[in-house]
Image 1 (cartoon, rainbow, N blue to C red):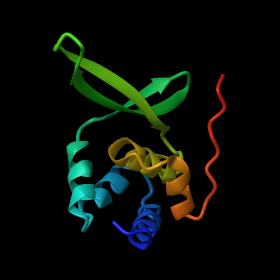
Image 2: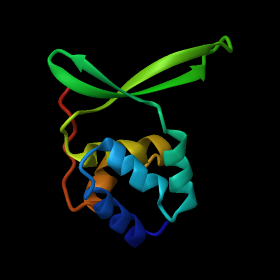
Image 3: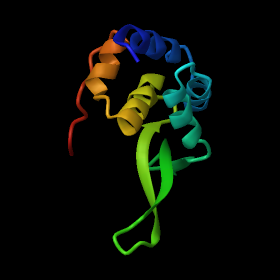
Length: 116
C-alpha cells in the first residue's frame, strides 16, 4: 500500500466511533491484506471492568514453548478512547507499522505512554 493510500485509509477509519465499527471498516477494506488481517481478529476482543475503567482487550491463543495452547490477553484501549488508539494498535500488531507513523497519517502527534 502506498503512503497516500495509507493516509487516506487511516483518516477514513477515524470517522468510526468505536473499535467494532473501525474493525468492520477494516474488514471491508479494498486492500486484501488489511481486510484479511482484520477478519482474523473477529471475535478476539473482550471488555472488562478494571479499576473503574472499561478496558478492551485482545484475547488470543498461541502455542507456548512446550507446544501447548496458551491464552494471552493484551490491553488495546479503554472504552471511549479515540478510535485512533485502536487503528494504531491494529497496524502495529498486524503490519509492524510504528504508532508514530499511523498518528502522522492521521495528522496527529503520537505521545509515548508514560511508564509507571
